[in-house]
Length: 288
Image 1: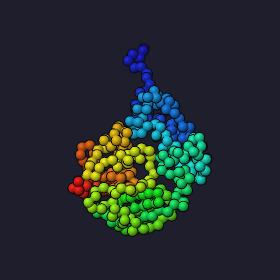
Image 2: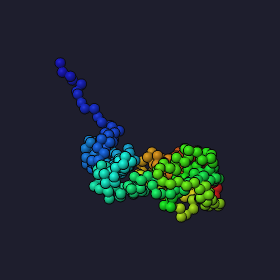
Image 3: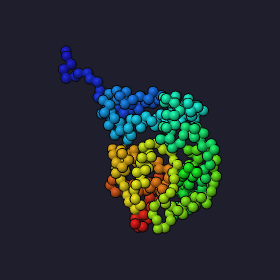
Image 4: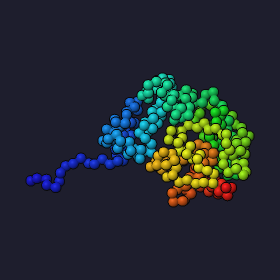
C-alpha cells in the first residue's frame, strides 16, 4: 500500500536556526577567518541574502561580527601570556600589524597595551557630588576612561572595581578633587550639556562606538527613540542591539544615553536609575 499524502521531506530551516548555525560554525573555527561566501554556504543562502539576514538578526554585519570574535580570541591569547605575534597568528591574522589595526579600531588600545593590562599607565579616580547624586570618575592623560553615578558617596570595592576593570595593572591614584573639577564643568549652570574639550579613552566594539558617537549628536533638551538612533548609527533594523550598546555606555551623562526613549514615548529604563533619568531630562528641557 502506498503512502499517498505522506511524503518524507527535509524539515525547513528557519532564519533563527540559520544564524545559530553560522555562529556555532564561527565558534568552532575561531582562527580560520571565513569569508562571506563560506558563511553564506553554512547558512544555505546566497551571499547577498545571507548578509541582509545576518545584519538584521545580529545588528552588525558578518564582517564586524567576525572582527569582534577575532579580537576576543586574540585578547584571550594575550591574557594567557601569548606574544603579540603568537596571538595574531593564533587568531587567524597575518601578523602583529593586522592585530594592531584591529585592536585600535575595536578596543581603542594597542595589543601591547591590552596584554600589559595598563602596566605603566596612571589612572586618577575619585568621587564627587553632582546635582544628581555622587559620581565616580576615572581618567588618564589620554582621556576619560570611566564615569558612572553611585548610590552613595562612599567608595566601595565594587565601585573601585568598575574603574579598574579594563586596566587591572595600571597604577591608580585617588583624587576626589579632580573628579570634583570635572563635575563642576559638566554640570555648570546654566549650561545643560557636557563642556567641550573633554576627551574620551574608552574601549568598545566598532558598533558600540558608532552608537555612542550618534548619542553625542542628540542636543541637550532633545530626545531620540531607539529606532531613530539605530538609523543614525547606520543599522536601521538593529534597535535592540542599539539598546544594548546604549546600556553599555561607559561615560554616564557625558555620552547622553539618558536622552533615549522608547518609540511609544515612555522614558524607559536607565542604567543608573529611571528616576535619575527623568530628572536629567527635566533639567535639560527647562534650561532650553
